[in-house]
Image (cartoon, rainbow, N blue to C red; front, top):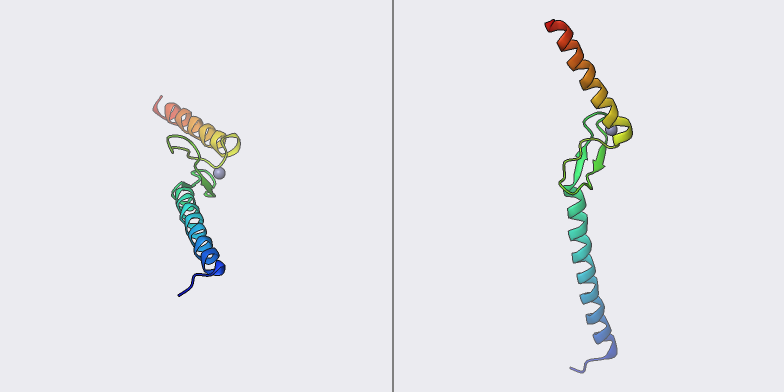
Length: 82
Ligand SMILES: [Zn+2]
């Protein structure tokens, strides 16, 4: 069977596609594995932190709110004990 230029192109093209999709799949999985739910508002977010320990979708809003709430709780407990 004679190999035509179309056969060559097709083979080349499908191997490029396979490589591309393989890479895209890996990257997509890496992102999906980093999806967390915000401890304050419950919204999902992608944890891009190096040690994967982010707890809030946004530090400025939810992170601060959670910290303030914990501080109030601790104060309340201290008052209750006194
Ligand atoms: Zn949040």
